[in-house]
Length: 96
Image (cartoon, rainbow, N blue to C red; front, top):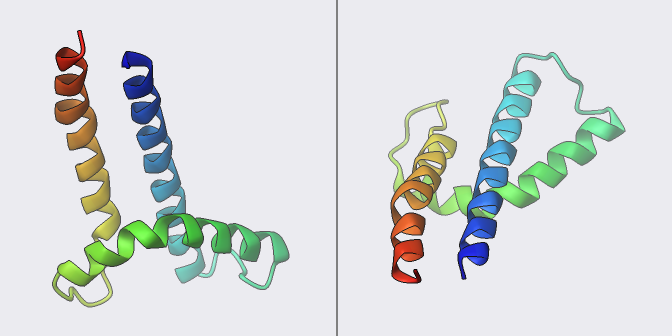
């Protein structure tokens, strides 16, 4: 069971990296650094959107409208850190 909890922690950490990559790519697109007509960039954007949007959409619906600022990735990252630092260690202690 401890291996499963370790794997869950690894997957959550990987998802944090995906969220950061999606946020950075959205900033690069917003500032005109990368061109979305590039096929690779468009595919990467679509992949990151498909992976992150199912988690970010409910958070965005709960947060108040802050204009052009989207803090939903920060909220999700804080939730993941809470899960990794509080919930998973307590589950691990329960199975020892």
